[in-house]
Length: 587
Image 1 (cartoon, rainbow, N blue to C red):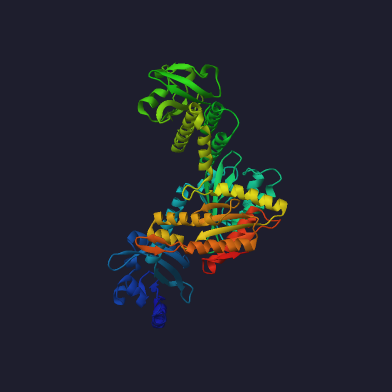
Image 2: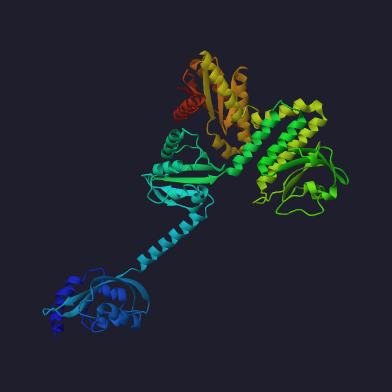
């Protein structure tokens, strides 16, 4: 027997393995324990004397596992040699634990196997952490896949780390390009080559340059992108702390369609061409295009009849003045409930008059001078793929109000000019302050800058921002914040000339455009405004608070466009804030 050969080195081995943190077990060829270290006693819960001389079966999950491991790894002369095993072992208490073991066969002087050396590590905690990490990753992956928006995560080298399925749905032509490892620029160029984006011919390289630059230095405002199938997406890009990028992609087609319809409706309303009757028909055409239906109509309702007033397009059997039995129209449920009514998929019943039978319909009550006396509706004989949503219903309500107003104006022609002026005012005025809103101001500013450049005249543009405005809102409430905005508007208005432009850009930010004014004149004006504002303390709950503002100015040069001036003024405003606020800084 060669076991004495193994035993002779036991004392030396015991000394060597004494302080090893992993369990060390030395067995003979029959897998009976000869030597163990302190870590083995600690991990398995046995005393040394309880282990030495015992079969290692004592430590296995059960006899079956012991025999299976023996057959697979210990049978034959050289079956085990440093193999790493993952298995479950059993403590003295009967508790099973996850273990990682390395088992090496020990050969005697004659070359035959005389035993085994096993190193066992308790990996229960590690496996639990790994399992938790896997579960966290799974949940994260599920959450990313469940997002309504498309999501792509890039590393610091602009290579894709992760992309969810929604992104591929948003970009069916090229969504499969963004696989892990591909660079953003390479993927974007391939998407352009495939025609994923609606880019005018010859402008592809310019478009690519702008998008790549924005990706690397994300803009504050998300970018809107038009796709060839007339869909729109909104792309929001943000840098991560490790230099990577998270890009979110939202479909905004409904919003863009609504914006286009409302813009078109505003244009129809503001147009000086055509009579009111023609404008109403044009508004119905806008509604039909937005809703994806073939025909729009307006009809008056009497006790038992429905009379066509307007129809777009004009059809032979839906001419103005055509009368239908109210019971044979879709106006009846609207009249009975005073609420909107719509359906998709109904082929129409025999009770509905033939010209009005349809597979999709949406209608709403129409009030004229405060009285529900008409109905506006849109229908189509072609099946509509999707049910009507709340946005479309709200649009119809807006359109119904618009048409009702037009009909009232048609009946009361003397109010026409006043009502049209009101529409213009609503479209161009900031509701809170009564001054120009951002859209109106920028339009006027664009023209003022163009005129100054054309004739070489001085012009100064200033951006103003109320200092610590968020704190005012937080401490005193939004009504006080609104009062502060109105106070600032009054103070500025007292200092401006009739040729000066003044508007609210949003929040607490305002813009002033000063024709025939150079840099020095602009600074002097801002100083006067600041001084006047400091004299107008506001009384709040018996206390007095002071409102101050910071200003950033820039004088127009022959090369400057409006965007250049706004950018430079914003940088100057930042400088004013950085220098302590309540001051004007010019670039």
